[in-house]
Image (cartoon, rainbow, N blue to C red):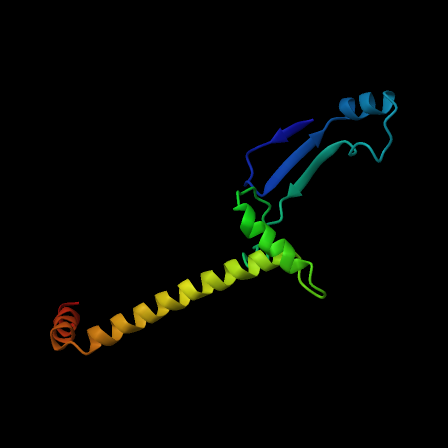
Length: 129
């Protein structure tokens, strides 16, 4: 069975010869085990994954007291599992950081737009553009 690699990475052609097919059938294979003779095109599907929805398995070291704390919280009735609680706390920290970045950017824009020297420099740049 030959694989032609002259196609795009998303497309592969597999060619099964009559000889390969007959040999496989002689070994006791069934029609479900091998493709019939000929060229068969396979296309790889690509799918965009939303990082917020993706769950990534990883190994990391967490301080023992932190892990015990979240496991103890998870023992409460109707509590989320400890991994979920840790993920929620990490998300909250990330969202605080992102909000701070937005606030810093807003403050910078406000400072620059209030600066007449900056406005004049932008005006001059636009005239030459």
